[in-house]
Length: 373
Image (cartoon, rainbow, N blue to C red):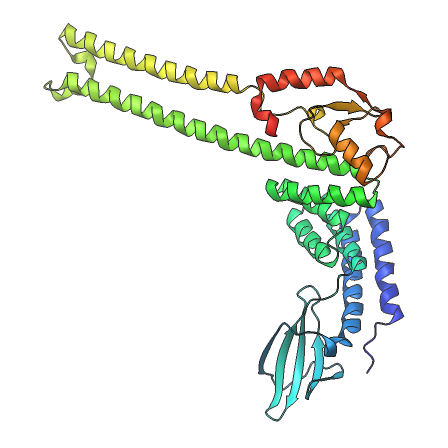
């Protein structure tokens, strides 16, 4: 029995993909997902048949043998070492073959795992479906599909880009920034048309990462403030009880029944002193927040290449500002063109953005934390 993929299978995958693209353009994402899923099934089946002929020469990573039940799932006999192997299935994503060994002890089931070749053509099917899931805000599905896509093609710009966006929405911000930075580096090399979209996604991920950090800082400060207030109120209660010691139970509970005016004055003084401490404590925390200033770097202060705060801003003929050092490095390593507009440009065409430089310097004087942003 032949195990080569048939032309019909390859063609069927492309037909489903084309239909999926049409449904996507019509914003019928559920229908598009069904077509992309069918395309993936056809494509993997074609790969399974193609890879099954190569198994005899592959380096086996591990082997597990156990008795097989009486029924067979059947395909083709493939010679392997000194036994005959009956090929059963190839779950391509898990990279594991299942075989039947015909031995003197009877039929044995054997799982063989190996590293499958990378296949960028397969990656596209998964990223297409992932984009549909992204539109439907099904971020876990996006992550699953993009991780599969990146295994088939580690240099997939779309795979890293969509994965980064999904991680951002799931507030897995460290992973989001990492994936989007990879997407940006790959996009520059591949000269993709949506480089600007990747930059915006990366800035959004960095912003959410900072907001996440801010929320954690606010919670820590809030918990600390509550703790210190609790200490002050505990000390207040201790001093009040000391004054009320020796009074009758009713007087100990309700200070308004204390007849001695001296005791009343002492109680009032204790309450006033501790109220002042609480007020001073709140002012200290409020002042600390005010001194921190804005906790977000304006987006136009960030370099479009390194995503760091610009120190020496220069403007290209397209009107886009970059960090001079990073733009010159771009010219040397990639080419003499504007990274975003893609128009021809060289270091001789640059001129300093003095107004922005002055604004950034003023901002950094008041917000020293932003230097390492």
